[in-house]
Length: 267
Image (cartoon, rainbow, N blue to C red):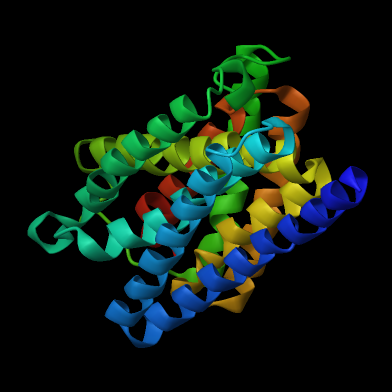
């Protein structure tokens, strides 16, 4: 009887993550048509995830239920990204500071989730892992061709008026920290760890990469979503094999630096 209940629990709970992923996709698609309606969907998802995490956290028997609670708590960071983007008064700040304004409360939320889930720094890839600094620096250079590919897909306007060191330095630092580090900590660190413990490595890799990709739907390019999904899978595998976020953080940051600060002046 107990084994049957455990099997039923596992089967049921492994469906819910995909339903939440579908909900995030629906919210993103709705944002394109109606910002407030899309924000409301993400708020509902955030509330549901918090309730589900709390439900399993207070139940006795730890084990699977503890992993379930940690997973749903980690998943709250996905709708939180869009909620912060839509609710913060970004228009009062210069465009290049928008990433920093959103990133700060998001990073605070990520740290809180990691602390509540009792994740250690090493478990989140906050260290050298299995490789030295040179490897991470060389891997970070992968951001240049990735940035070129994404630029050819999206063709965004530059975030700075001129391609000069004084104009580019601070925005580049913001992109490196606020998109590179923050997003990698959330998706390839916290969320990947929680999903791997609950769903297993392969399912976690696909699910988290899918969620990361659909949060790019608002770029209005199916090709870009597919490209981002592929990059997310690649980054996840690298973090899994190296045990460190350093290389993918550099690559992610350099991708966005090339995409928004450098390549628009050459094409």
